[in-house]
Length: 176
Image 1 (cartoon, rainbow, N blue to C red):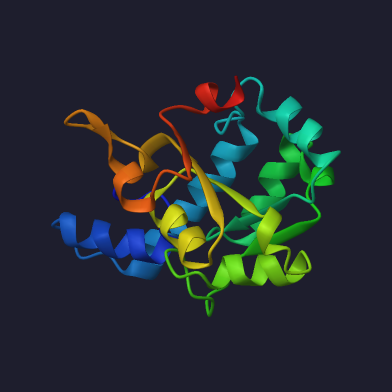
Image 2 (cartoon, one colour):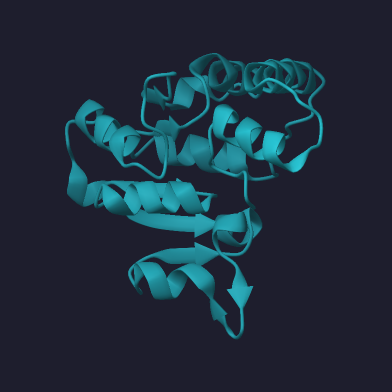
């Protein structure tokens, strides 16, 4: 939960603080990206049942964009592996100089790329940083996964982001 939605560099810095070894942040990032490539090619990042068909159906009526703090090369590889790239009109990916989520910059860029249709924009997010970024860009949010946590009788993000957002504990609930 502490790493979802963060950049590889931010996560490497957190890891560096947690371990006793004196590893360079760039070395940690390099190892992580290498493992990502290996895992992607081994099918380690599966797509949950129903996601591909949902994306295909949504692409017939909506302009879909990927808005992510992950590098474009990793996103393109993942989309190609699952044959999903054809459904997305825009890929808004972080670069080393881009402000990462929870900053709204990536969502603001996506809105410009999609002709600024703020009223019809909906973000589907799986991280706290992503929900915060979309909300800061005034985009409605559907959240699931680690971003929404049931705690002491209520959904954690519901109180923070208001009743207008839909929140799901799992992707499967969202797909129903």
